[in-house]
Image (cartoon, rainbow, N blue to C red):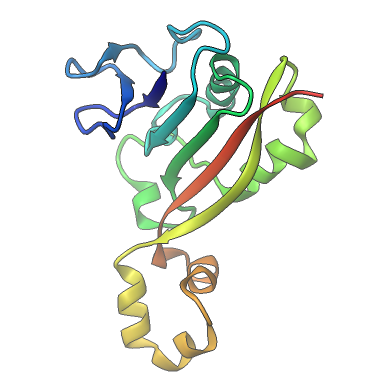
Length: 173
């Protein structure tokens, strides 16, 4: 079984069960309430797009994803990019940045991961906003200094729309 967390009325589809409070969802559940309605190690993949920033605290959500997923399960989480104008919109309770993801995965992993499974950060990248095209048009000489859009988005926050995190569920050692 594949699960989408927080798809609301606009689910990913593609074989994912949509879990959210919206009446149109496959499973109605408040994602701030734990445990989620899945057995341990029963989920093969998790996808979540622009949901985590609406929830009270990201860490219990990440731990719950680790609980419900099988070892080796891929997890993709998309959130507004830090510094993006999208980050500071109505109903966003916090941001989940690349620095937070790296700290939870490595630097402070022993403080966060105590269960039998954990999420291992595999990679993350930025997705551009329409502002990147404006930047390239308005500042062509500066834009020419950056060989790719990832560098532009890293240093000019408004040019990034979202951060895409790829995790894998692993045994916690």
